[in-house]
Image 1: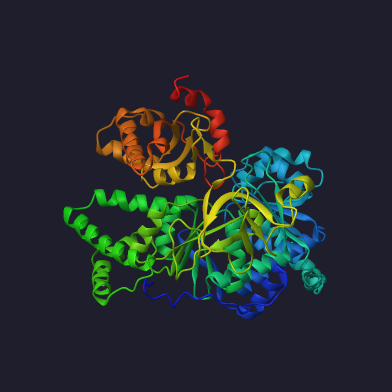
Image 2: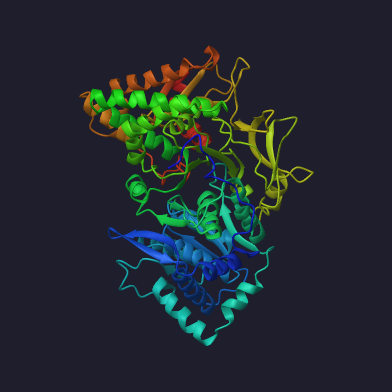
Length: 619
């Protein structure tokens, strides 16, 4: 159990845990080193199944043998179109072991996007999860002359399929076993032939502006970053992690798969995105990395549960979290915690806080990590008050994941921390843009030399597009995206993300987009939290027939107005939100308004809902 005042259990490590200059070499060295220890766990039909390092190695060798038998040459691309499942990792490591390039495709992408990504990456073999993903591939394969084979992980409902281009993963492994028997040294030779400077993976940006761009990462950058992560906060073979974010996103690929490969931390796969809360409680991870939306959801769940609890339970929680807040305040101020307060905190945990931690599933967590989007400082303080340090990291696809990180011994809510030891970070004197340099930085965008050139300064620093500040201790803060800063008609510069984060702290708000560039005042488009707002409506006898009618109910409008009023009190009059509009369509990751990481696309939302925006300004 983590104690806020004892941080000795979270220490960075600078030694090389597993040798290897490529991901392929590192993986096979890890298999040899760890053998019968468990690496992967998945829940299948209600039961947890474990994969040892040896078993993962056997599966990867068979898939790699199968790929070689199909003719996949070194340097050729294989793409993976699937949710986050163990087979994703097996396929990825097999492709890299063959000297191939592995590319991930979001499972929420439409057939047209699958076509674009496969064509742009010159995909030769496409792994798909199931019949749903296979349908997308079959729809566009006529337009992909380079695509040789489609490999299906889960053949349920496809047993009778007879298509020469489609093969099951089991059949591919069978091919691989036969190939490896005939060519016993082939895989070893392929692994040995992979050079650190070879292209390893493609990570396509989410395409919030224009078509997705394929960020190229070499083996050297991935290995360098995995080792670098251990100098931020170390993990070990004793750690339990959760694997649930999309593996085609750099956060889970680097911070989940490759970092766990390096450190030996166990990777636990959730059943599906909807079972994350239930699976967290079962797994009780010792290290938990998630995006702000997940942390907000957990906080909302606790807030709603409290409203339904007894007066006595509410009073116990209020006292306990108050004690936790006193501890958190002292820790954040760098002050010692007196023995009497520690004793009260032990009582607070026994009385209420341990139950809250168990309800979320973070009762064993040494620390929590948040990234990929800004988070409310109040949320960081709340988790600290429960007794679990929350560390914010910042980075992007192009920096191979985290570039800065808050150290556990000096947490500053609202800050993304100082530059990580493995790269340099600076602020551009003229624009305030945060810029990065280091061996972790990507090798450029595939097929886009001009875009690549635009992304770097004349002296070789990566332009991140994020605007920030840095304090005397070297801690950076993101103030906004360069393209997102609002300048009102009155000339006032406003950072929309600050207001949006405050709004998202409410259990009734999932996301928000603040509008006001060249306008007389600020307005906001809000996406409500369906589950919590429906519960509110039911508890207050608010009639509604569907999602749209729920958003239009006067009582719900009043509820959100109350949230906005509360947020407005924290800002100067010129920064306050005057009007709002609730999205009346229930959005999912399949909708164009949302990125695959469930963030509203600011520009697209502003374009698509232009009439509603103009109505808020009386036009």
